[in-house]
Image (cartoon, rainbow, N blue to C red; front, side, top):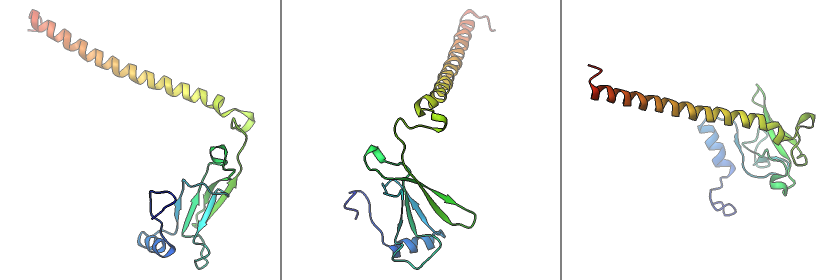
Length: 149
């Protein structure tokens, strides 16, 4: 049982290797756990040398919550099934993009466009519902007056 997280179980290298063999995989990649380097190789000291470790934790949020001072990382996968981690440090807030763009200013046009499309979709659905309702009302009026016969 994983007492530090209070919600899961821990497995050792033998159980992980058995699982990987059963599902015909070479490595288990997991996330959502802060790592000082942004990644961590589990069981690497217990295993025979292999191209990849059995389990890799990768965490892509550098300086998580502005207080952990950890690096972020991502994994590079090549055709030969080699997995290579790449670490990176955080940048000062407000997170700056290339060409000194502020991430919030950068994203506003995308948010505005998404909001426009969302409102249009709602309008279109309401318009279709109104048209159907209007047609039904006209059909009922024609039936009451005897016009449609």
